[in-house]
Image (cartoon, rainbow, N blue to C red; front, top):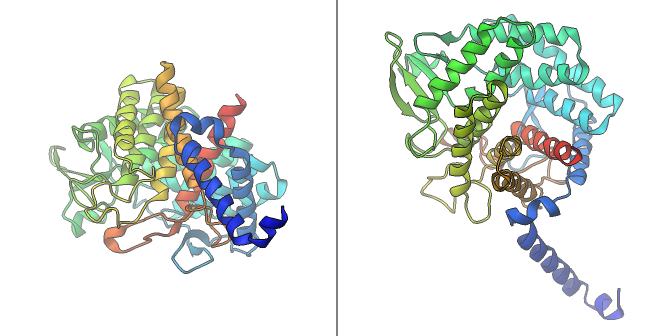
Length: 408
């Protein structure tokens, strides 16, 4: 550094900060430049290092990270029956995949094992895919452990017990029958749980699991998706003849608003359904949902928790919605035949990852999580502007998908 710069360290810092921000604005916020400029390996290393740091804090095997709220530095833990219980084991499996570290493998196995207890109680929610496919599913993918295989088949059969053939969907929240007066309800999140059923059907499970998953996806497409390709959070059905009663929200701003993470779940779920079925209706739906999401992104590229919150721009962001959408669009891009569409979704996904990997969204030394600024359930005042485990899970998944796409 020159003598002049040594005399003015603050000025030098300002200049370098300005150069960084200009670089970020020009390259990382441009979808066309995103793929060429974003370096995925340092972010994978960051995630592995932070995962190891959390492990070093001596977590109990049946206490699983869920969130870090504002002002906190350490994870708040939940038990195995929380819907988020599978994301921490899933992160450990992804961290093992990214690092090849034998100790990380042992920890992934250690934190996966207690989730066997999930099936020791009556099935009372639709989230067995999130809980058990993110954990045991990734474990089987990476180890081919036959015990994981058999447990996943049992999990899929358990999830299928919530399917109502008259309605054509899996019941989401049994407790909502009395609490909300919903005879049968299905939420858009449930699209992601279908992957467990598809996996089981092609890995020795009952072939009818495939039919259940397809029927659920078709019914959801006809009821949860609005004509403008935004999504209701919840579809309510009659149990006598199975007809669709209404679309409502539970975690969004209003019944007719576009809840950001719900749009992401839809994009992710229908992309996966196309992969598993080859049904082009599902592919077209994934494209339409992704297009709607991209059309409504704010100028800085990260969605607010709900696109229709009237408090915008003084409204919380949702990094988790961005992470889910990024992972979904990376896979979606691989199914596009036209080069311009392939580039569109790929570059949009990388642009989201670049923004999530900026100082504004990385937690750095602030807390144990990877990311800041997710929103869980704003209407309930829960997990607002927080670090949430599923944001980290889908961020790491997207980074690995990007890395694998670069390699191949």
